[in-house]
Length: 181
Image (cartoon, rainbow, N blue to C red; front, side):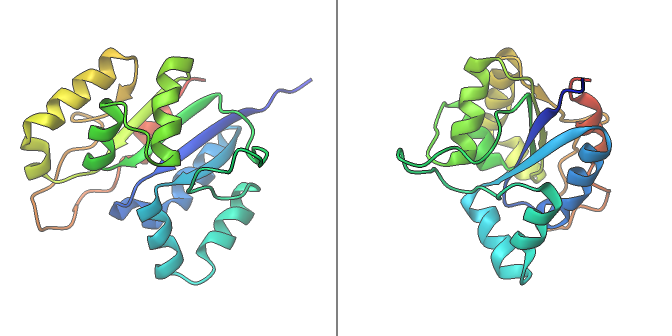
């Protein structure tokens, strides 16, 4: 008897989201049933940047791509997660998440994950100026204290200079390696 592990990938509007198929395929290769949840801004990027992108991602995951709360009368269309990967995580979403704000489906799932004790890995993506804001360090510390694995520095994400493209490859492998086995 085989059991399926479900991974929610929650992606914010940051440049690595344009290549979200990379971690989706890698997680599937590692045995995860992958569901994709986008922030509203990331969803807008996906629908405006590439015609058919949402359909292609739906086909890749085998699940609808969620980006907004469902109505109370609607059934859940995704299986419950066994783990969550928040990547790329924007500075905006980081700070809202740490403050317990759940004004989007993506943030609602992330805030609940802490209370439900769902293993959660966060791989940030922001620039050095955003990183220097005092709220950022406090938010990272808050999430780490709550049990979230935040991959920042070292083998994780290293903030890039403002107004410049990130020159190094986004460390998707570090996030996938940090997930429970």
